[in-house]
Image (cartoon, rainbow, N blue to C red; front, top):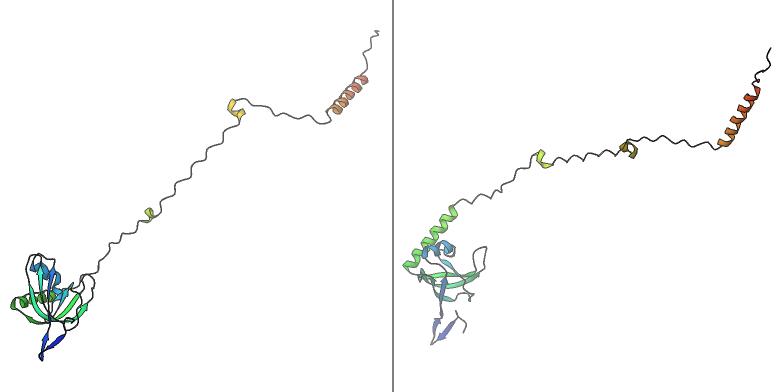
Amino acid sequence: MPPGRSACKNDFIVAETLALRIKRPYASVAEYLEAEYWTMDTKTMVLVGQEELPKDTTVRFEIVLESGDKPIRAEATVQKPVAARGSRPAGLKVRLRRIGAATKAIIDQALAIKTEKRSLPPPPPSQRKKTPPPAPSQRKKSAAPPPAEEPLPPPASERSGVRHRKVVQPPADRDELLARLRARTLVKTAAVPADDDTGS
């Protein structure tokens, strides 16, 4: 028969009760309270890491720490599974029915921690340090000046110190001009009278 259901025996209703041993990885009760205070309330508790059980199942459970301490021992009925949220793991929510004095003292400490944490102001939003913008002189690096133009090398004639005269090309009718000059010279020569050799 599934756990949590009643069975009729000789007209008596007998409720089945499950025993749960829940181990938590803490070395002390103070460490356990600081980490899992949120699991405890006045009439309810979240059993961290416990698998889902049918609703209204009666359970007797104890919380066992690594140090061997058992800060919580109680009897409860299952209410509903609780999903993980943020850094808080999933678990099973139960309604407390019977608790001892030692368990009640631990729950009171958890409620005090919860009240204290609720009264603390929320931390201010993290302010990212903004790097100041660079100065205008540093924002744009001055462009490097263009390289100086090298002077053109002087002509070969100037480098050697020798100056060459400009070569003049003769005219195309050079021979005709020379012939005319010669003809003029002959005419002038013929026009000059010869010296008279006769004496008086």
